[in-house]
Every structure is written in structure tokens, then in C-alpha cells.
Image (cartoon, rainbow, N blue to C red):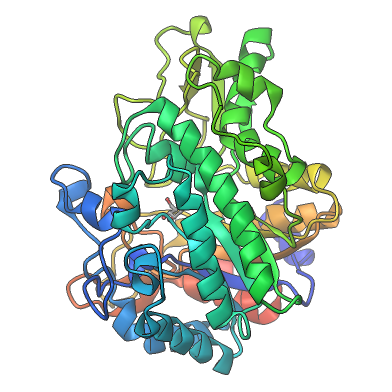
Length: 478
Ligand code: IFM
């Protein structure tokens, strides 16, 4: 729709729609050695030479642990109505097992109280990739016991915060934990073992199921339990049978491996067949699928860009890598016959093509596949090379255009019947972007890494207006 038409037809959201922003513990907190916190796999990985850009770590990150009050005040000034953050497991349960450290839980109690006092709805993610190192030393996610440890941790946090936090997310993007962590090795713990990555995926699913049950055993029934999946929108390069088979394979490995057991109680047969040379799935024990297939209260969708694939033999020179970081090892076990392509169009600083139709398609897919399940966009956003002007302001029109396009796609899906309850912009502020270190800025708020001063970018002001009015501001006024 041209902008003039958009001004004539304002894009307005339902009154109860949540306007949020998201972060995660290791990316923002810093204070990695304070108050009894022990190393997580990301501390170990980022301190291993060559693993992150410039050897950067989350040691200080953006010092949110000490500045959380100011950060919450900033969210309130921006008019945000929701905030999604994650808990650092090793701050709460330093060895990954046994009793909780109260001082660790106290930090999150204070954060939640601050949010509630300002009328901002907290949404807790229990696991955003930072496994306590001690659990990795005991085998990590390929080890079944890690799922039981997660359930114990979920119960501890549910008991401590379930009285005041209604929205709960068990895992963030388990695909990344399993396949970037244990397959391609570009994420912590940096292992490159295709069989272990599938085993990790199963134990993450089991952790989600057992964690959901554990949370519900200690929390008021009004609370909502969800999972955030970075479900890929997989598209074929052409309509040939080979390219369509490539889509099936990647869709199973990106999506079906999680939503199969979680939403339907079964792994897709096509996934089991395609990976049969990599693993025999014998670690899926009797009762596991029942434990995983818990009714959900909502589903979180994280979306950035679509994935374009073909059969490898259609284009032998096409890359086998997919934009998830450089590695000689593939994060797609059993998919050596699939090639990945760059979707045409403008890209963000991550090299990810900007395509809001992917978000619309993703929402409509789950609207069909999980009828009646409320959806949240738990992450969406873009990295740009933002720099302050001479006046100290940070103008990021590209990010405004990105948010505008994607929020319009959300609104279109609502008009077509999708039950989307809220949107969490990734990210509230610039932060540690994993293997990319601090090079990629996803924040709506700019962070000066020398002083740690926060400055809302023009996108934050644009989003603030949307949050306050429930209507997307026109692009030209931004
Ligand atoms: O920064 C990450 C986040 O931790 C998980 N989802 C994708 C974001 C951008 O890469």
C-alpha cells in the first residue's frame, strides 16, 4: 500500500495488544562473577580465543544487572506495555542443580517489581542459551539428565516469581541451542557432532515438556506457559520435485523437530527417515512424547527472514551454508543434498533479507496448524550500523521501515483471523550479539559501549508512538 493510502487508512491494533521489547540475560546483564553466579557455556565459549568477533564477551555486556532500574524507567518513558527477559540459570542455581541462591532470585524479584510498579507486563524466558557450565561438563543437552535439571530449575523460578509474573516461556529458539550449539558449533558450547545435535533437540523438547509440568505444579492456573520457536519460513527456489523435497527436509529440521512433538506428540516420519543415517532416535524413550506434548497456553514466534532452498544437485555451486554464521560443519544433519540461497531484496546488517511476507506466512501457518492457540511475536527486529549524529541523536530510518513493514504484516494476519496478542521488538537496546560480539546493533535504544549511556534511536520514538496510540505512525513523521 502506498504511504498516502496508509495515512488515509491508519494501521490500528486491538486495544489489548501488547507492545513489548525483548532481551536475554547473557546479552545484557554483565556482572558475571557477582552474587554467586557461576560460568555458563556462553562465558566459557566467549572466553575461548577465536569464538566471538574481537574476542568479545558478555562480562560487562550493557551492565543491566546494575542499571535495571534506569532501563525499566526508560521502557516506561517509551510507553512499552510488556517486557520479555530471560533468567540466568547459573545466577539462580550456580551448579545447575540443587537449592537456589536467593540473592540471584532477588535480582529478578526486584526487576519484576520495578516493571509491575510501572505498569509493564513481565514475560519470563527460562532458558535463552546459557546452560550452567557444570551441566555441559556433565554432557550438556545431548545428555538426558539436563532435561530433568531444567525441570527442577523451572520449578524453583516458578515458585519464586509465579505469584507476580503471568507470562512464561520455557525455551528460546531451541533450534539454535541444538543445531548451532552442537551441530555447526558457531554457538556455545561449540560442538560439531550431528548426532549429538539431534539428541540435544530431543532433550530440549523433553525439558520443555517437563518444565511446563513443573511450572504448572507451582504456579497459579491463570499463568500462561509458552515456548518461543524461531520457526523458519522455508521456500523453494523452484517448484521442481527436488526443490520441494529440499523444503520438506529443512522444514522438518527447523520446525517439525520441535512443533511435531510439542504440538502433536510425534516427530514427523519424514524427519526420522531423513536423519536415519545420522541417528537411530533410540533416546526417545517410552513416555517422552507424552511428557513433551503438554497443552500450551500460547506460542511464541521469532521471525527475522525467510529461508530459500533447492536440491543441491540442481545447482552444485550453491552454498550449503544458510546465513547462521561461518562454519565447516552444517547445522542441518542429514541435509547434505540441500543448497541454501540468498532471498533477493534489501538486507539488514546481518545479511538477512527483509521480507515481511515471511512473518505473515508464518503466523498464518500456525493459525492453521494450532487453531485456537494465542500467538505472540516474541522477537522481530533488525541490526543496522547505527551511529550518533553530531547532535548526539541516532537516526535509524531503516529500522523504522523494517518495524513498520513487519507490524503491518502482523496487522494483516490479525485481519485474516490470526489471534496475535502482542509483539516484542528485538531488542530493547544494543547488546552482545553472540558470536558477532557487539558489532551488530539490534537495539531500539543505542548503547555507547565506552560509557554505557543509553540513547533512544528514532525507531524507539516511532515505536513508542505506536505503543501509546495503538496505531502505526506514518513513516514520513518518524
Ligand atoms: O540476538 C538474537 C537473540 O538472542 C535470539 N534471536 C535472534 C536474535 C538476533 O540474532
